[in-house]
Image (cartoon, rainbow, N blue to C red; front, side):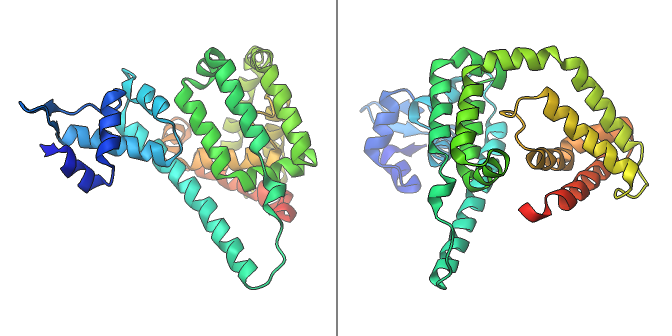
Length: 292
């Protein structure tokens, strides 16, 4: 057990902040001494560590409290999500450092204003506040939606680049996304009503995997990739998928995932996921090269 002053020294969190966490019910001490002093055990310190990770990612204390109080809260799953977001943030910081290095050398670089998605992010925050039930219904939880917003913040430059490529400007992109948010329930109903077409898309992935062993650059293989992309863009909202380039990245990431690739390969044969990744990567490299 550690006293509040020991916890403050160990973690860098001030005594007053720890007292405030107790007052709002965010982090209760493990026990109180006879004299009324707060004491914290290892479980409390682990909870504090979780709180600090969420704070570092920009979550307000109220939302952190709601997340931690959920009956189904999974500490390990939360760590995995936090790690993913920190990696995104690190990537963004790396790009900012690279930009500063170029500026130091006297290079003329594009301004940050062109990549400002604040209006769109504000629209997402408003959507979360005004349509909480809809967010929970389609994202599973407010936490998941916050993760979605955070990913956009941390990869803002890349998202903005894709937005400009697809819509011509950030303003047009934001206008389209606001329209989608205003009609989100209608869009989702339409999307869900087309589940049969989505199943057909899944069949196309199986068809693609069946060509395993063939050159991914072959016309039949690339035709299937193109067919999958056309199908998903026809049946799914741009809010959920985005551009063809973005969809290719999503598929490469999805079928590169260790867990998902094992599940798919178990059903359809070893190497199926790897083959799909190679096919989409080849399509991406040969159709979007000038944009990379």
